[in-house]
Image (cartoon, rainbow, N blue to C red; front, top):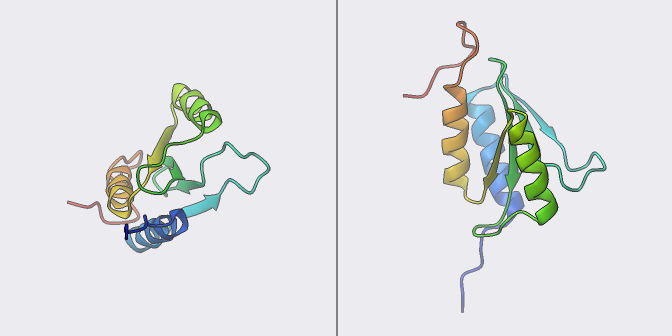
Length: 112
């Protein structure tokens, strides 16, 4: 019997909880309910002015062609879009994003 892959919603929930724990002031917006199927799942708005878009997938899954097209378009505009398929990868991306400050007065501790 093969082990089943972790569900997308489980990965998404764990990464959201981690982001809120590391940065209580982060705003997290669900995007895929806005009538656009190709949008990333979540937008993370950090109090430093940094915005991060994440598309969550089961481990090893790829974005749809429409999602890939939109991700490339947004990246070309200078936005950060990641496809996350494991909890650990999501945590690493949150930690990295928190170090990308646009202000001197951080509202949270920077991970070492």
